[in-house]
Image (cartoon, rainbow, N blue to C red; front, side, top):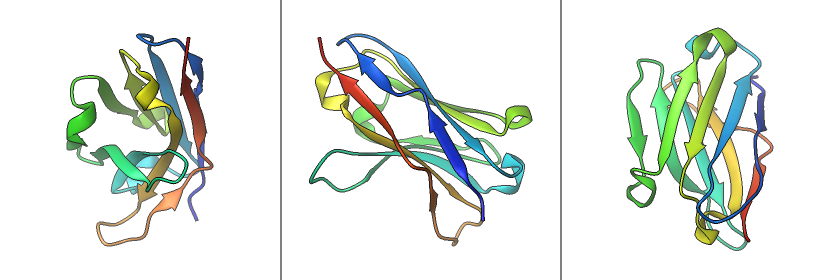
Length: 117
């Protein structure tokens, strides 16, 4: 079972930026897809960005242009850079992985991002 460890969340003023990191316990090149989701209280978990082992990237429309997902295979880490943060970006951000296209998601513990002045 792959374990995921997220980091990088925190309190950020509106207009600021931060980068979330997610490190896998196994080789990231053995994982078909890495993704970032976010979830606000009483809301469903929403997929915001994903990247496959062959670097196919997708974003949900609402974050296009402000979020950037990338991976460093040597560090077994995927990143989510978030720019021009707004209070609406306040959420818990979760990293997930699928080892195979029809496999189940494995989740990290989540990292809180709070956007406030």
